[in-house]
Length: 266
Image (cartoon, rainbow, N blue to C red):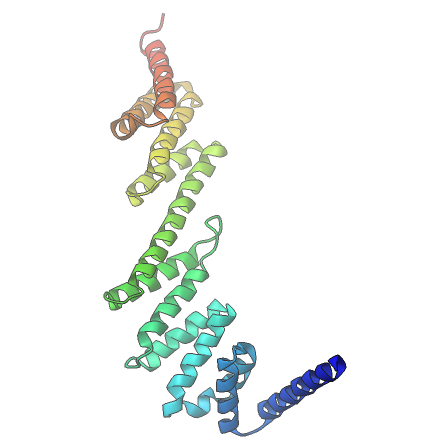
């Protein structure tokens, strides 16, 4: 009995595959449309896509074209191919701006670009692109039920850019390129005013300036220690009560001692 069931299942499977191959290789756009729709409904997106890509040009400008183009984009989305999903949803919004599905397509296009955003340690070109797409969506559909989700994604991407910029500044400090570190921390503080890393950036700039001063040529030490003192005052202004304050105070003590010995040599 079990063998009969297995044989029956295999027979149905082979017949189904054979029919699919027959339609795929055939010339009937109507049969391809019907099978593509059926396969999509069954969640067989890869097979459905292969049929759709053959017939989309034939249905362009026809009533079925709108549905077909949306299902085509959504198939790639469901397959996790966000490069093609983002592109195809974008094409859909341009081709069918009055469609009832245009808002959903715009959201899924933006979300596809969000999914392509890499780890903070990598190049963030795709993150910048995702931010642009999400912001455009939020601006175009301010009352959408997806607005809150889009805002969360925007915040997530901005945090990633924050960390990228902060880690870049820290890397300069780690390799003892103190001038570059100071500039990077300066830029971070200016460009990321609400960042969670702002406190560490103020402290990192102080450390970089201190290290630059004590490792400088003798004729440059005093000027750079004074600059470091200014960075300490900036840190103290905003973060006097932070857990980094004790370390900052130790640096300030050493700065004062060094300045005193330079300005009042024995």
